[in-house]
Length: 457
Image 1 (cartoon, rainbow, N blue to C red):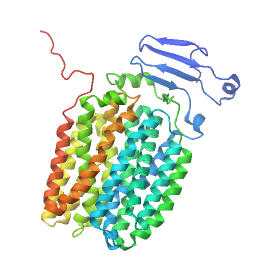
Image 2: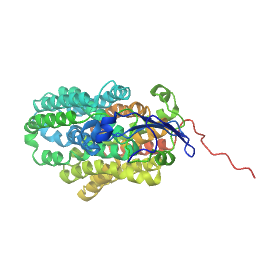
Image 3: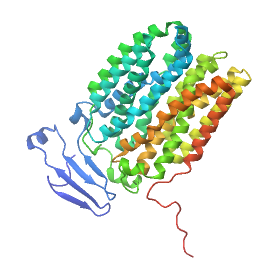
Image 4: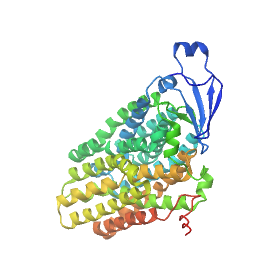
């Protein structure tokens, strides 16, 4: 549909106070319909929009292809975290030490989260494209999986952890750039695959623990091929790109921005970011504890059903939480999510104390539903509090708290299990999750007043 202005004309809309500039397009392209005019727009909050270019014109692929090219690598790479607990019995039979395996997964979590911050910085400033980052991450992940299959746990922790961090950063940031009008929900779909993708692997590893090393050796090249293929497909849109079919003026009115655009350094100096990171630390420590030790805790009762339901609901809960947040608000939904995770720890405790498979499966389901949904909510809250321009980098700061969670939830979690037993460890996990819920109510958006002024009589 032709734009209602001449090429190069600047329009000022009185009702939205938005400036729009049409970029000239070569006449021969416009005549045959190969390219649509590019509209540079700025809303009354100062946010910029580059409208008019279709995804097929930019990449040769529809926008949905970018989403699924980010979804598949996350589905495969997430097995390194969520299927590791199910692999522990088989790895023990192969001669590994339990304490060593626990610290291997803890180191993996530290490096996976630690790689996210520099990766986010590179992506935010366009110093690394998603293609190179995703392919490099896939190579490192495959090498890590192969290392564990050959009995070298350190390679899994170092190579696999860094590689998974690169894949996570590349897929989430690319999804956010291609879906700016609904990035929270789309990032929830992609990060959900990071968890529920491990479900078939969990079942296979639980039913056939003796073949775990052979399975890892076979899985490594399949992971490499799939992630590399997706890496060759994905690309970034232009900076500030906006889908032409979405009215950016209407979206701007419905989505008020942060008080201002914070840089990563400025966000780091605000109390809100520190409290947000502390809240994620508490929630992630509990989620990692469950992922690492649920197979051991459920071994005498119903390990397959409990672990499979935990992993499946951990991923599916992320998409569901974003739909709920659209109605209740993100911070309120976040408090409910981490409270549900705490309830899951109590149900797991009851199941273990009473040796009840039913209670154990219920606890695993509830813990899983709350144990992953907070990740996309924190990403959305980072954008809401600190702005969109540096949202990838600022969320990288918050997400890096997961590295400390790996040490506490897995490393020290194993110490608590070995020293005091499962009841005490699960009780501590419930307290940590409730602590995250309390912290959710202790920050407010920087730059906004804590309370509204009272009306004068």
